[in-house]
Length: 186
Image (cartoon, rainbow, N blue to C red; front, side, top):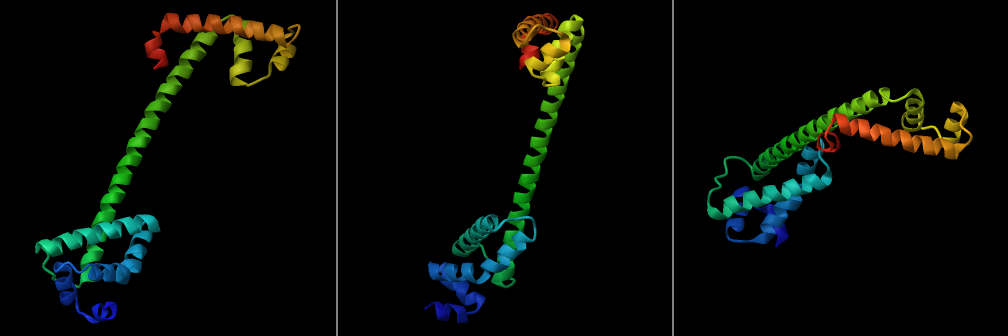
């Protein structure tokens, strides 16, 4: 029976679809699959995305055929191609909108992060010289406690840890006194 479908013209295939012949839809799917995948692949899509779009296009085609809304003024392949193009454009627009929204969110987060870093730097600048050095070496220069102890002339790494803890407590107090925790930590 599939052989006979392949010999039919578009109007005969459309009539079969209107009568509920699913083999006619299967035939169209297989016949035009590669063309639709190529079109979407050449326009920044994957084969999986192309498959989804093509299936959606066939559903649109089938619904219009069954309800009698479809009047063929071109070949079925051209009609399906245009449905796929329109669906793919909508998908690309949706992806682009999401991309812009993500970039806006990242920009906002980057701005907030930069602002908080500036606040911390300002508060570190208000600390004594030793605390400023300990915290800068540890948090920004990522030095080990051993290296900090050596550089600042502390007895050992444990002394540097204790000093870092005390300086961190002092820094926390400064930040909290200047900015509410809601402003700073949210």
